[in-house]
Amino acid sequence: MESSEKTAWLSILTNLLLVGIKTAVALISGSLAVTADAIHSLSDVVSSAIILAGIKISERPARGFPYGLYKVENLVAIATSVLIFFAGYEIIKAVFVDPDLPLPTHIPLATAGIGLTILITWWFSRYELKKGTETGSPSLIADARHIWTDMLSSLVILMALLGSAIGFAVDKYAAVIVVIFIARSAIAIFLDSVRVLLDASLDYSSLTRIREIVLSDPRVAEIQNIWARNAGRYKFIELDLILRVKELEKGHRLSEEIENRVKMEIAQVDRVLIHYQPQQQEFLTVGIPLADDRLTISEHFGEAPFFRLLSLQRTKGEIVEETLLKNPYLSEKKAKGIKVAKWLLEKGMDILISHHDQSGKGPGFVLGNAGAEILLTKETNAEKALRVILSEQGNAWQKESDGLIQ
Image 1 (cartoon, rainbow, N blue to C red):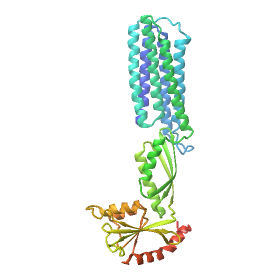
Image 2: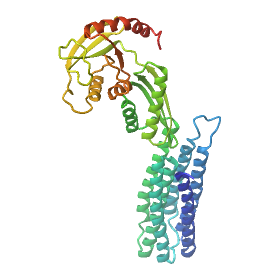
Image 3: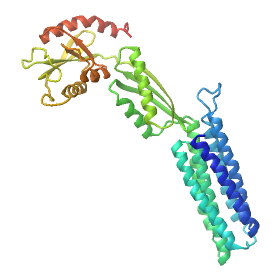
Image 4: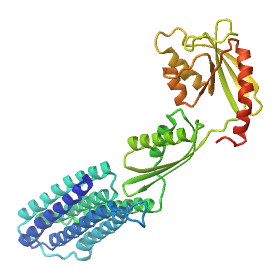
């Protein structure tokens, strides 16, 4: 039995206890107000039973509802908001419509009994609200607010009893304050549930967190669109991504990784649907590690003194911009290759021309995870190696741009 279901059962038992205490107080004191409050608590037992039914129904699979029956909880929450409004009506009726109630007897005992119900409802409303927030259950949150109104209702009864004992009628003023709280609580529950039923978007902070998780992967070039909504306590997320991958299999694996990461970081996510397409770049940035003469390809990656970065027009293979950068990590003692790889990726490098394959090494993992290619060459002169690479790759880039290579 999951936490939300246990809490719903505890809510039923708590309300039954409140009904028992208030019924006993009503019989001893003869107070019609306490009798009405006992009837009110009995309606709460019905409400809690509806909550439990909503949780159980929302868990059941249904062929006609492929996205689940999670929104049953929101329908239950709306029904609960109506019960809260009814609770306010009961208080108004007891205090204003029928003010000539007979004075109760055994006031000290009645006061002690009502005081006990106040303590029980205060504790349980806080407990259920905490559990509802932890599980993301709208019906438990609604029921917690409903039980909070019971405490306010009992406070009105307590004030009426104390007022009767000392000869002052303060119950009308207290009732106005209570009804305001009741109305605010009911309206909040009703509007929140309607938003979910109308598939309103998740809140801004949740959407921002999802963006951060997705964009933290260097293989994600861009988030074109993001949609996310609630259904009951669960969240459904849909992403439209541009990925720095060229193979469909790699794109599929990456989408699964992102889905798992989102589900681990964001609570109560039922489904993450990802649409993706490979990045189509008009320009490519090529990096070449250079020796001290700035003409020869360096035999070392992390220890290369300089890096030549060239921006190429993809279809024509023409150089449109060129820069020579000094290796900022040349004096580093540890992990300089990994740091250089990350630095080049920050500079936008898509292709590395090198003498040595970096597979199985730290820089290779960094570059590979980001979707950067490593093109090997036997040429020692950087300019000659670049011409050979451009000649070999030009036709492939042209076909890929024309959509012949997916």
